[in-house]
Length: 345
Ligand code: DAH
Image (cartoon, protein in one colour):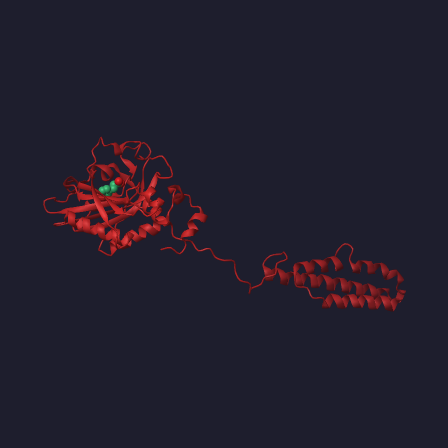
């Protein structure tokens, strides 16, 4: 009897020493079996009464050794597994598994179109000028020959800052013209891309914030023909080498004469009829010869220098090029919309 029970305990000790434990759940089974409230070793202590008196001590000692072996094994394996996974749950780390896909960002359609415009003008010697979005009344309006009582200054169109009547969010990038002309003398050849703000009702076609690219070229003898040729070059680079343009007389306070430029979009399908309102032509930008008053306001002598300027909206061109029907999509930052432009440059 006594020999049987001794060999049973030796078997348990052997299996404690030999059992392979690699995961937390295996370790937990081990704990329940040998260290839990109803563990196998405990029940063996009850067998002591059946062991001959002279072997009782030896048997008790053996059981204590078994218990100790189970505790030691539990602690050392727990230490190994926790260090391996860095956390105390059942987690097998497979270093050879492929990693989660990394989501690369994509360029925003407004940036894509803006960058195209910038690179077209950079190729013919225009430099990028970036200026402040918080402007003062003088650079945004007065210097640009916009009279005090001009409706564009109205509280309804312009966001004034706090209670100020002079600090505002620029309503157009034309304010950069004034910034540049007051800080440097001709020759000036810049484009100014950036965000502008107007107090307009948000709809599918208009927003209270949008982007423009302004252009300004001032030097001796700059003519209307130079402007037309520059803008034709731009239209063809942007919309294809066969693109035709037309200049329609218009009015802007800061240019004289002023014009609006249309590109011929075509009338090939229903969409073309809709976006060109049945004319085939699309308005792209405003332009003109810089008004001598603007030059004088900014300290440039109009008897020596002439120049042309132009300004265009980006959102409308992005919407045309990418067939976006609602301008609000450009500002909502919905990744389902934005990721469609991944890889587009
Ligand atoms: N600033 C005008 C606007 O926001 C656009 C514009 C028109 C800019 C004619 C120009 C220009 O430089 O010559 O509507």
